[in-house]
Amino acid sequence: MKKLPVLKYYDLRDLMYLNIMKCLNGVVIDDASLEVMLRIEKTMQRLKVMGSDARRILWIEIKAPGKRNREEFADANDNYWYQVCSAHYKDFHYMLIGNAEGRLISLQNRASIKGKRKPDAWYGDVSKPLERIERYIKKLVDCICENPDEYNNYVEDHLPYSKREGKIKRSMLNRICPEYRTFDDPQHVVDVIKKYEALPMTNYDKMTLRTYIHVWRIAYVAYQTKDYYIPKPMSDFEGLSDMEIFRRCKKRGHEIEEMDLDSEEAFVEWEKENSLYHCMEVAYARILMSPVKEEGHWYFSLSYSIYGYTQDVFNILESLWQEGIRVKCNHAMTRMLRYAQETDYVGIAPISNPRAYNDVIGNEIILPIEEEDSAQQVAEIISAAKWKKQIKVRPIHK
Image (cartoon, rainbow, N blue to C red; front, side):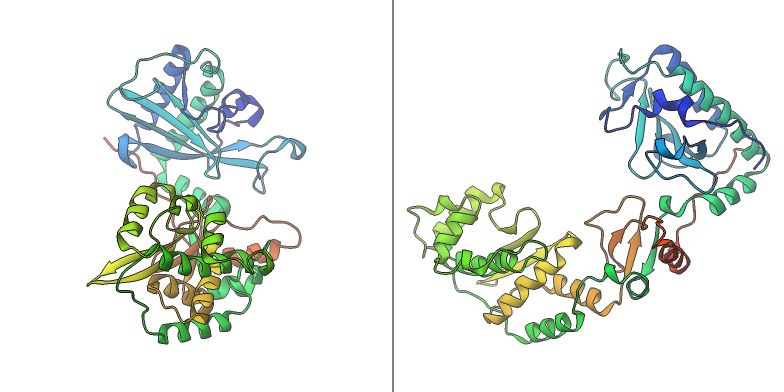
């Protein structure tokens, strides 16, 4: 890249202070700052639109402070990489400045699309750091308009991998970093699931509180006593009936008092009145086990979304198998088999989504931090992964 103005983090600190953790709804900047922001927007409009709200996005480099004063990791040249997004919708103008790893600053001309303009009296004066960014952006856009390939190739070659998205085969990741293995004994998982699939589906002519509580108790005790980190002793549950455990441990469990435990109508009423309180869950908002009625019969359905609860779901499944109870959980079993047999991919993202999974990606991770004992592992992951190409920036040729 041609010589660009040097941006120093310390010179931008008043702006960088306004991250989303400090100003959740963004900052309505004052008139002087808005004038600069709109000039930056006009400069970036020399580039082709790159998304909704007529947005344009550029990567910029900022010289990091000394190592003792860093709040994030810098590249080999001691630079931070930040993305600047300039956009507008009708008369609502905004600029987003972020490092793709959690820090995000939102500057706006008003609080919302229909809101009135009311600059923030405390944080709205950021004209000075914006002017520094303006000089950098103007020079950068000039370079892009002259030779867009130079900028695009530079970003593709130098952008830190911690800010990129990619995927790696689970088998490869587990070989490089065994600590990422989902199960300590994957073959045991495969064996149990195969045996579980051979069980006939357990169905009920009617669903009652007594039936639901009995199956829920099996799942809940397995979840608590087989927990990987802090398992509860089985003695906490020995000698207690299904009802006692349910009343003691289940949210809204006390709602069954004086209800007919053997009446389907009572169960339906209890479920309806308590569904907003996560009454069908083994782990609150994490593992769902709910009765469903199909073709005149009731079944139990077990599901989960967050990858970190995979071992817990397997523990529940194993306990149900030992009791001879088959529930509908084909999707969960398919996921677990992929994890155990290492047939899927693991996504890599700057900020991992614990609920991210599809037919290809089983879960997401962030790239491990390069410490002395893991630098080689990080290098191997980077080499083995397939990385998404960065969106190319193109000028508007008039």
